[in-house]
Figure (cartoon, rainbow, N blue to C red):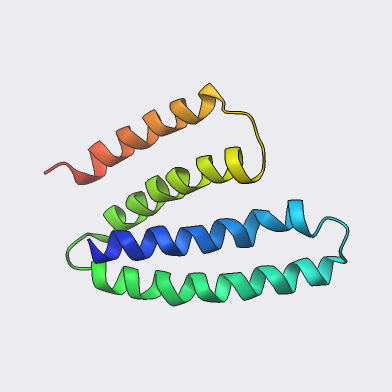
Length: 109
């Protein structure tokens, strides 16, 4: 559970690092957006590295990666809709179904 909580928190930071500058720093020089993103990414790594260290052994490397992808989509969709004002698309559901298939195959015994 610790791994999952840390990965969710790290994904929130990373999603903002990757995409929030498109909304908030659009008029700022590129170097400002890069520095702001790097600043956020630092905190993402402060959570992501311990999450992967804690989870490795409980989860295989492949399971950690697929878990990360599921969490990424779970964080990204609300971010895109509520923060960035993007429309809710059926494509998010289809992407989620594909990830559910990935989860099935990577976690099956």
